[in-house]
Image 1 (cartoon, one colour):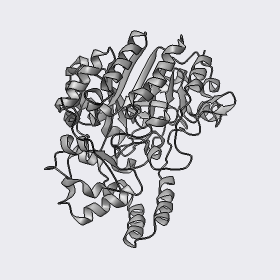
Image 2: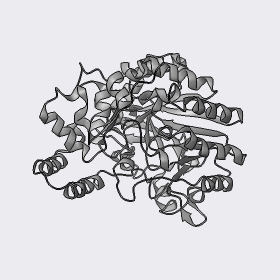
Image 3: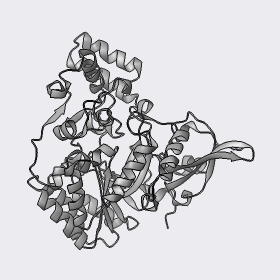
Image 4: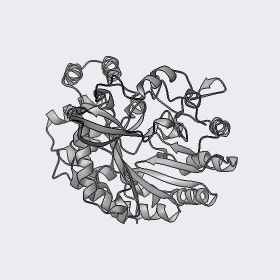
Length: 448
């Protein structure tokens, strides 16, 4: 298989994309307006192989990668459109964009305030440690992607928002932190996309972890969109064989390697390249777990999810999560109400066999933890939403059911009110009184 020519597009050269030549100036200008606030990047594989241009502007992969006017609220869109129409200087446009970005909740769920751990008296801005067993690691060379998803909650990583970027180079600091924190069994390489890095750089991190022989480190996860957006990373890139060898020797060393692969629509699973890439990854002994948020305008259809889960299982992947769009960026555009999210999940779940029912959702990665919507119904005469945590800042919160008043419009946990006359959800007082800014996760609660 030959590698097709790779070309990357951003706000600076998107008008060169051949398929956009017939698009109206109004639509192109709208892309430019949104792209000056939220990040845009696409590559030739996504444009040529995944988007059905006969269905644009409704094609799901087109909406997934190209800026949409509705992604900005009308007042923000008009502000930026006026500046661009008046041909204001770049600094003025940049400052206006920054002001808008700060209104979009750039780091939800306490990522910056509560998840950043300390080591030897200093905050480590290239890591997050929210849940006891798992550390998130942001290698500095992996803080971009082959293409940017329009819904991405990590958009601040890509727009130069001061103080809002996670990144770290020092493997020694990472190893030292893991050695000191024996409760950590899993490390998740994330970004951006760690598989945007060369194998040489990725290997410098992974090999250092393996060489350290940390008895507590049992699993390495790679959060990536590379299988969907550039499968040739595993097939014909210059270092593809080296990458597969790196994964295999890590598995052979006794470390479980899991690709946390983002697939947002069945279209991403249809090319010969992605199927071959999945096969090659699985040959190394690594497993592939799949996840995606539920997205209005893209995959808010039970049939699409059922088709995606079935095809993933056919290819040897493990359906893992259906997420709820986070409360940041363009949530107002992509978000699906929690009640409707549960209905879509249930309808899709009913359509697949047991091997696809490893998937969990719909799940919100909220401040207290990963909150799953279990169902909607009537209890003691009151219409309620039943929820539970799949992960929690305090592990004792996990799997305890709790109830909210039914609110068909709510998109997020903070829009829900406790049912049955309760003033707060069971975890709220402890969260407010125990976990405060600057406290390390492992010292916030008794994690014995």
